[in-house]
Every structure is written in C-alpha cells, then in structure tokens.
Length: 93
Image (cartoon, rainbow, N blue to C red; front, side, top):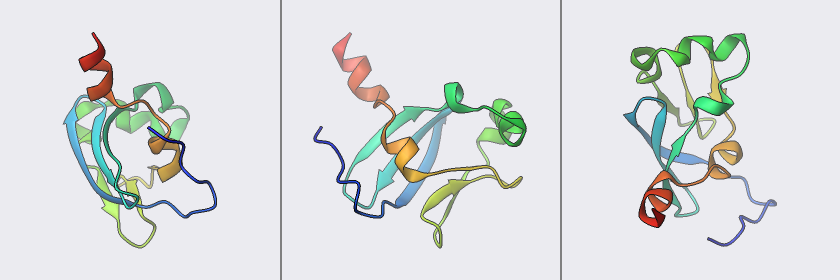
C-alpha cells in the first residue's frame, strides 16, 4: 500500500467491530482495512474499551470523521490508517 499523503484530511466513513478489539474501517481515500487496536488502548479514557462489549459500542462521528465511544474516547483517523491490516497479515501466513 502506498503511503498516505499527509497534507490531506483523512476521515473514516464506516466502522464495524468484527472481533474483540478489531475494527473494519472504510476511509474516505478508498482504503478499507481491519485493524487490531488493543495495543493502543492506553490511558484512563480507553480503559472501558478493553471490555469487548463496551468496545462494540463504537460509532462513526460524521462531523469529526473518526470513531468514538459513549465515554468520549476516540482515535484520530490517521492513527488507525497507520495500523496494519489484519486481513493482509492473515493472508501472509
């Protein structure tokens, strides 16, 4: 996959939890991927997301173009875009 041009504003169009701490994401640059976010759940605001049931409450904030949870936790789209695609890793095995 080619590097994302960092001068563009990136937005998430769709997000779906697929497994514990995994999200299937669709970005406005056409990239679709499935990412594992547990390693980046650091800090008090992310503690509730470690519960798989709470994690599944994810929504797309259409105004901000990112994913959010009821407690206000969110991730910058760029941070999620930079994570490896789980589907690619599985095919490589």
